[in-house]
Image 1 (cartoon, one colour):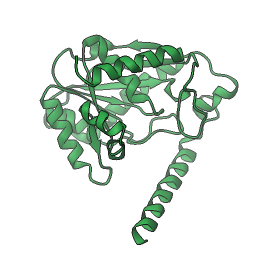
Image 2: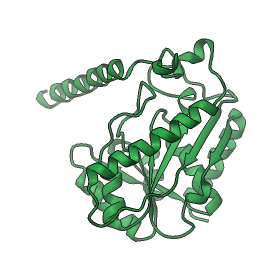
Image 3: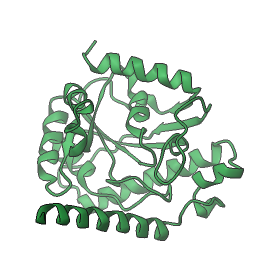
Length: 254
């Protein structure tokens, strides 16, 4: 038992039970029972890190997630995040997070990374950053393509929250480990990772219960849903980023 991580997992699983969440997890055997690894995860909902970690539990593993630095500054979540040995990411100076991730995998930990960096409003894979491949290559550990589908129906951007009982199905797949050579090209490795995750995601979408009515907002436009297209989602992301920068600049000048 690791405090506070193990009790937090127990609390989370109780919440999932009360919410009626129905998990289908494939590929747990691809999570190494010992030693370091990098779990690369797609990002469509606010609770993705809590769900992805479930895939490591059958192997008796805990995942140390990379998360934005601001979460660690909160008076409630900050002590918990630090206590669970998660890794803060400063998006304006990411080298520190890379070094911390490398130290973690070399110490035998599994590090969870969202290579898209931010949540996908279109529910399609966004362009990937190279940090996951870099840590796996330089740390000499396997890279685990991990995909979630259905988590966006619980809580995502620009949509109602369903944090009470919703009986939502959530599919989690951990793909075949990728072993990168010490001289692997990071751009090529990142593209291979993205292709592997795209294939897994397509299989999950095909196996997922059909969405209708208001739930079409959680389905990509490409599949007949009413979610924003990747282009529309990019415009909204850009608007949010511009607004945050303007707010910061106004605060700095006051």
